[in-house]
Amino acid sequence: MSLPPFRTGLAYDVHRFAPERPLVLGGVTIPDAPGLDGHSDADCLTHAASDAILGALALPDIGFHFPPGDPSCLNIDSQKILAFAAEKAAELGYKIGNLDVMIIAEKPKISPWTGKMRERLAATLGIGTDQVGIKATTNEGLGSIGRGEGISAMATVLLYRE
Ligand SMILES: Nc1ccn([C@@H]2O[C@H](COP(=O)(O)O)[C@@H](O)[C@H]2O)c(=O)n1
Ligand SMILES: C[C@@]1(CO)OP(=O)(O)OP(=O)(O)OC[C@H]1O
Image 1 (cartoon, rainbow, N blue to C red):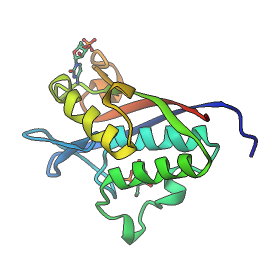
Image 2: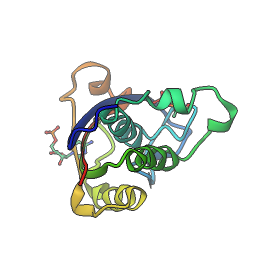
Image 3: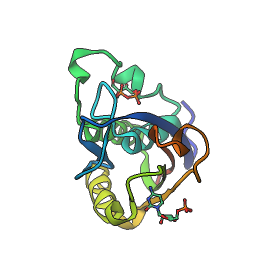
């Protein structure tokens, strides 16, 4: 692998609602909100963040490392997946410059939780909270997300070498 000083990564994930499950986003359990369906904890924000890091490194995605359906991944805490991606970056000599995430959801209201999510992701990644951005938007009623069928997330990351 060539080792340029900077590498960027981009990722997307979406999960449909599964109201009987707890809602975990950015490693934070949001009370009184419908959860998401998945083999893991279904934390689409953290999945997108993890895939952005793996993508920046040109490594296979999270499904390769944590196969859907693998019993060892059942209800897995996605912070473990994010920590794995961060370890891969460190192994290849990269640090995280910044991570930026966008949540697209009609519900619940995300903004009250972004502070805790930034702290959780920063702790998992071993970086400062000022290196983690999290924003949310609705889909203005358009499409499956707009109909309130699930939550999606996009993430971008900058990695650098010293
Ligand atoms: N699930 C969401 C969606 C939006 N927000 C916050 O509301 C603002 C306005 O959203 P629009 O979709 O109308 O642009 C947005 O900037 C967020 O601050 C939210 O917290 N949770
Ligand atoms: C981490 C995994 C493990 O099953 O989680 P899932 O909940 O299946 O979520 P998805 O984003 O569909 O695919 C990633 C999987 O590898």
